[in-house]
Length: 196
Image 1 (spheres, rainbow, N blue to C red):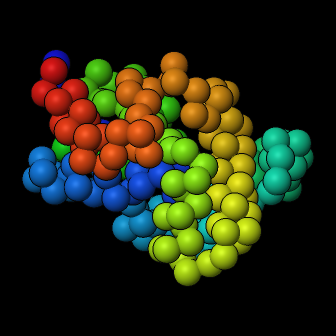
Image 2: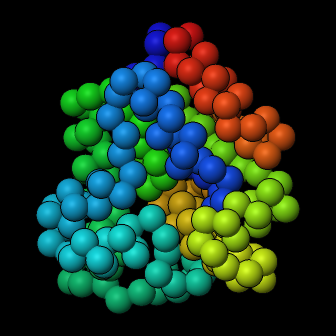
């Protein structure tokens, strides 16, 4: 069956967001990344600023912090409520249209659909550092800190809510090294897989 929804999970600095945007343009389908934040905020009742900071990245540093964060009388934490709103928005989007969705555990949220292509983009450390330095105008040390912090928070969020391991090849249809393949080849491989 042809795939109509593409989810892209990615390491910070690997170019996954750029690759996803290009794939969406070439397929002529909607691209969802930061623009999904307003919808999650509306559904959850939290501010867009709060959602931007917490919907994909764990606000805490480890799984234990997640497990023991404050809960309301229903047993849900603020993080749980944000995740539930994010999940509902992603399910609604997938039901309505063909699209590319960046991050936000979309691969797991849409796991029961057979029209989804799940992609993980990773890269070589040196390439990612160069990209982060150029994009954010930071030193190499700062680039490494940004990369480690962002990937750790993405991983913690993913591992907690999916009970799977973030970045593990078995969770995705395709796992691509953008440093080795180049962005153009990653895009072509994704496009090729969409049509099969």
